[in-house]
Image (cartoon, rainbow over all chains, first blue to last red; front, side):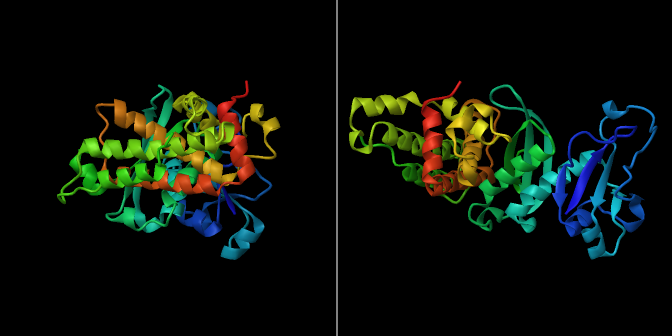
Length: 181
Length: 168
């Protein structure tokens, strides 16, 4: 599995664990990794920007994917850390989509949008709109909608996202009818 | 007491999301469909809790009704929010053999999701239910019942005990 790390600039690039562990082929595709994105070997923590300063307060600036020796062999790359061209905000959305699509079926998920929301108790929440393909509700595997919710929560927990997800489903036609997500 | 049949609530939800005239279902029907899906799950859990606590053969007794009514949406919601936390709050650890298991985590996830949707549907005038969302809410409710019924019996009893007697 490849580890997906959100990374700060400065001397302390990470806090906590990776956002996700993904099969190597999926990590390469999802984060548009290229062999020339190699940053450092597995023993050398990659650092960016002013490496003598604490810059974590500026938020995540990069996505770095850690590829172990066996996974690297499988694709003929060097083991180590690779920088993705995908930015952390975009990566966050892609990981949410990947978790949902794993259960709903990639062909049934057109795109996923997310935005801050408030739940019925007045707490911060994460409003997630899953735009599904026309007719997708009849094509899902039995239990897929609930399995997708369970997997999404697990992914958000891995990503240290504590807001409760409020998931809504819509087709493009339904969104157009009510003027947007 | 003839307890509510949760499968009938899901059947009702199915009818509500099927427009008889072929056009789009009314917002009122979609909102009620989501509500029915939630209540199917709620009544399933509450019925089993009361069956365990008072006994299935006493369903017509006031004691049974008392136990049934003692379980609130809030108490179920709070327990379910805790069940899906990782790690599980320590207050539950001495009452469980290990954890709640995947089936009850699925049930708890559905309760939290449907409860929120029901709240929006019942009280938020700006909430617009889309057909896809209503269909998948009903599907989620139906799956939650299957997962609850499939759950390990001991874990299910532990869950229901903690629902009735909330640890401090």
